[in-house]
Image 1 (cartoon, one colour):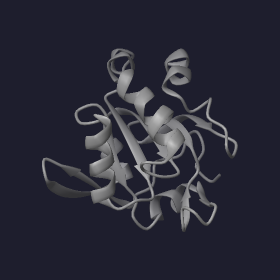
Image 2: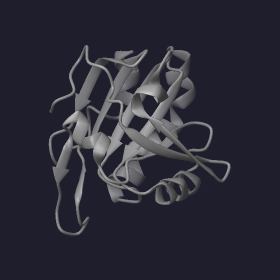
Image 3: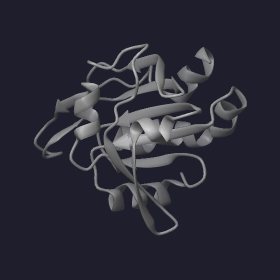
Length: 160
């Protein structure tokens, strides 16, 4: 993994769809001047991502914000419309920004791009959670393949 504590989030273009409008930003700009949690997941609508990872951050968004987090983002190598649909389906609106990394450039810039099984069809992001303050990474919790524990919202709450 290339991204490490003390480094800046990459200045790589990503997209977020809010209120029917697609916004282009960079991870660096998204995190600028605030404290954020960024989770990365292998894919929208996939079992662990949809049943555990994202729901935990939605359920605990208020508690995380009470501990000083200004925004939570969920990054996946999916297009912006898929991420918006997943956000709508999951109830993420207003709690978690659904960040589309359509070509995997942000995942690659952070060194978290992985080749997955053929069922997902292309490189994806490894599962992780990180904290960044004013764009600088302060904490990283990366999962081993096929594991979900250290990137959970509950684990993050214990560490903030």
